[in-house]
Length: 330
Image 1 (cartoon, one colour):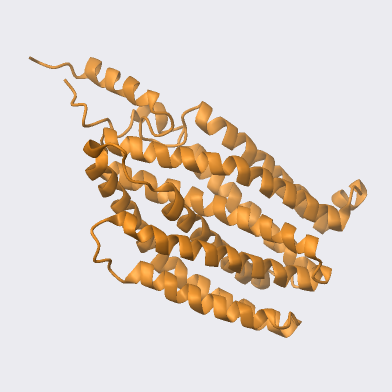
Image 2: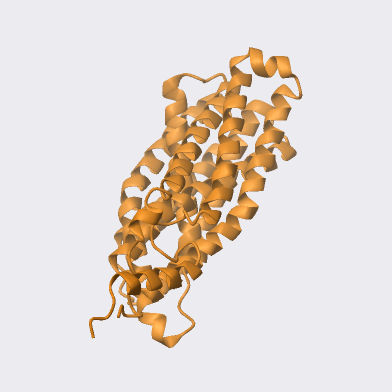
């Protein structure tokens, strides 16, 4: 009989095709973010491909780090049962190792693109905000480099969470400064516009980085040491992320619509007869697609290719199938 300490890595034929949905969602988020960056840069009079691409690299790397440190600081938690502690810790350590590997690639992109933006926005006239950004980027580079490159001497992976929480706070503050850059140039630094822009950038970062973690960190780490306690740990983390997205998604949509309204209002003619309006419509279409995927994934058990991660009840069904397919010869 199949051991209760192990579980099939996948009910492969049942979930492999469905698991394309989170990857599609990540692709849609990426496209929507590029269009959003294009829209914002257009308001600065800098809508060329090279200008948009460099700005987008800065914001997408910021988003990866923001959502990643959210997951590391808030969603990874130790087991409540003593028998599960070792598996929970091993799974968490595996995730942190993968995150460090990806961060070592993303951090240089973030730092280089951030300083490129500092030079560019400095020339465009955002004032003393430039020096706030310089200090933030330097502090972030030090904190994240320490987390990513300096081996921890503590065998408890959860000891890394306070530093992750500090990095998350700094990254959200950095999103505020990035919003201030945009609002200062396009809307004269209005407080309401700044709040909307900050909430929009912050929500995007938390969602994008969290989605990357789920696909490229949580699932691979769980597959390496898949077991019932690991599935319980992974399922708990994924559910915390889903709860967060229920707040992040409406924030992203509402702030996006309010920002678009400031430029085109309810002018349908302007929406369909201008390149700016068409970009807004394209982004809205992508957001509707994201909503559909977000609603479909848990209903279709498509959040993970590992049985039980989307819903722990599925774990018991996977065990039943395993017993039927591989009965105990004794």
